[in-house]
Length: 433
Image 1: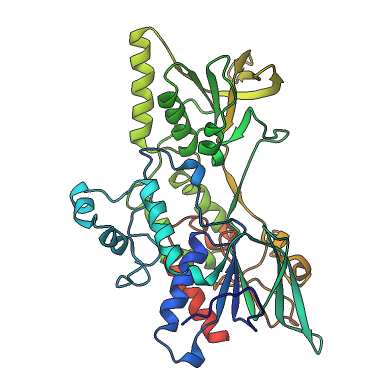
Image 2 (image 1 turned 120 degrees about the horizontal axis):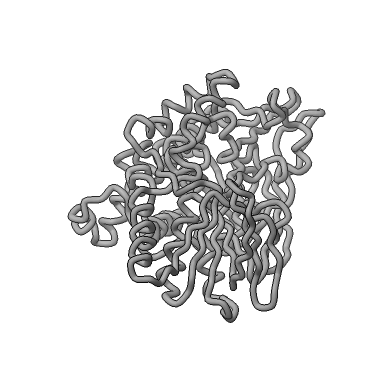
């Protein structure tokens, strides 16, 4: 079995995983299944450090009725091992809902139910994870001038205790961080959608009964629909620079950009081809919306015009020119791009659904960052097995998951390949341990 973490010294590990979202959860399962099939001396010792106090994945956007945008078959294991008992279908069977799900005739479960699946899987490998433990540095362990191992230094949230885990390698899967436009800072009245549900529970008093939602992607449309439904007296203003929401391209051929073999193709491509492929296929994932949700929002806009009370207002082809606080709210100066005409909208809250970016792994590498090499564009250079390229004096392995779109393609931050990628990492670790 995989050796789990303890509060005392646990010796030298093969791998320490930083972060415990879906990517490293899939890795924990793959390592567990690998160890069950090899002699004890060939088992991988692995431990994970997670800054959250418990497992959670985009909790702030587990909106009622929101569904996944990927098939349930792209779960933590199925594309790697269809026989695994960590599959989504095994979860449904465990919950006595498998027949009901089959009768539902959908490939896209509720987001809240898929989160339950992830929690169910995480609990089964709970012994491998130290929660509420924030990594602050990765330090080289030098032997005769070579970096043979690393010390992963972390701090426990409750006690402030320093924890050091020594390992032959690390896997950095630090996830995404929310993006706000330049000059915008979160406050009681200025939100990013990543914490929407938590913010709604702490909603300050409403004076104007008006929300502004900035963004044109799936999250922005979901937030707009959610607020419009939850607050039947409030006006919801959707603000974006497009003329309307653009539908996601989820056609069969376009979706092949997420296939495991597409990662091989992308990695082998020259930079100009990488840029071309990302440009061609941005409509599969970025700033696009499911057509059913677009139709629903348009239906509401039209219905309200018929009824003579327009609560859902679309400010299209527009940009936020200025944001300033006012008493019990915010004032938003909106510029209509075709004419340059400006209008001021006063609202109780403004929600920025302006996306996410991968956390730069170099920020977590700490003392090890100086040993890592960049590519010609100044981004981290990675091997096909997701190992950072390092100087010749480094024997320790530094793997990065998520922040690899520039090298491994558009699926890097998505669920599509977590199962296959976890298997690739385990094979790489097993060969190098």
